[in-house]
View 1 (spheres, helix red, strand yellow):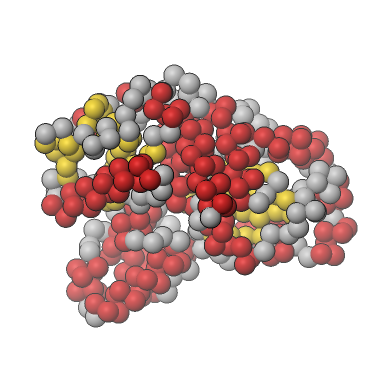
View 2 (view 1 turned 30 degrees about the vertical axis):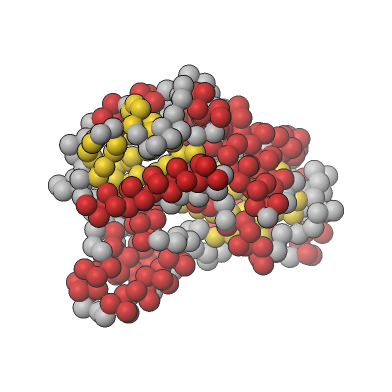
Length: 377
């Protein structure tokens, strides 16, 4: 229970860091401490991104934990002559998009005794052990890279559940932070009207206090405002939206803020992803009040990802990939089973397998994830 409280507190500081970049070192160190790591960093699996794995030509600050600075300097000094053997091997490791990976899956104890990386960087830097949590955000793969010293011991695959519990929050934090990073890597003056997505502030009763121009443009296009409350025009979507807002308000009162995103259907337009961002004390001060920050993102794509792409990305069977593709196209589980000519129980069994392989827990979360994938492979 104490570990859960520590992780929840660390996640809250990471939400703060999404709004002000200079908060990342302390926020990530809190997360490393809560997860039982010595230090950690957040990186993108994209060589064109400023936060790519290889930081030898770094031009901007990166989201690193406070205790990682000294090791990072040692890495930069020696990496040319002592390359990290894990980089190439990670590409060959067959794992789903959302997964947990440890040192022992990539290198042997014999290699760790003799390879230059361990002799010149890992051991002198007291970062003998490594592990990472991988997750998808807006079609791009990210990872939380964690390190331990020899005294703390190796990361074990049996700890996967412990580390993967932070994935839903990290997904939302990075998704939010990327929107703000587009404005500035030091967004101290970021305000709602600068966000390139719909954002609405709600009070403790769930009533709208103000919103930015992007959110305002959604009213009449899938969203409605009635008696200062935001509703979805689609009845089923509105039921889910109100349930999400109600759960967020209840969670804000008892301190157990765990609210899954919801997908809102719209006639003649792409679906909307609705997410609640916790209003920490810093975020509340930044936005001059408000109790909940409700965000809306267009799930835009030329067409649904192909069954082939989904199968290869998440190691789905052919039948599971066809169902996943159908769900991304907007079909509900019953409509998808009719369209694919399979029984409803078969479809639900396949859906459970798809949820497990994608690291999602509900159909709305799955749909939001799949809709962000590219439409071509």
